[in-house]
Length: 230
Image (tube, rainbow, N blue to C red; front, side, top):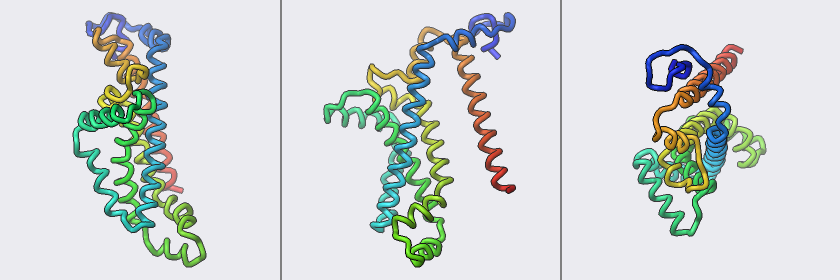
């Protein structure tokens, strides 16, 4: 509501206006930070899913799947600031300069803590008779993995990728420590802007993000219902 208020925030209602939305779309720095957050989130979610799937494939073939899962719960237990400090210390010890690479690595490490347990739990629910039937029909283990196991765990892959994307897009702690001075994501930009006071432009941005997230949620639910019906 305050994104349509003519008066600056916080202030009583002074009439409707779209001026804050015009300022929002004219703010090049804000959209540049938003695109940076989008790029980092997509990269982190993609790498988390690929690496998590590879780890589960290795665990299946080596028979050590149950031993591989518990270490990834550490990301969910320890505070995020501890993980951030540890990663920054590791980057400094290795002489790695902070930037896009370190930020994507940090978000990928955080995402693996969600991808591996979720996908592994779905894998354990797969009927082993399907795998045995594939092997009996002459398929190799790699062919069985890609043709049988991966399609069965695809919903968990999509769910974990979406979760990692959301966590990465709005993350602040890891981004603050691992981004360096050359990268500015949306969360870092908003913090720098909010130090000077809450602007109605932020209200307009929050309104757009809220509407987009709800539309995507409705589309996802409609696709799910269609699959269930047909």
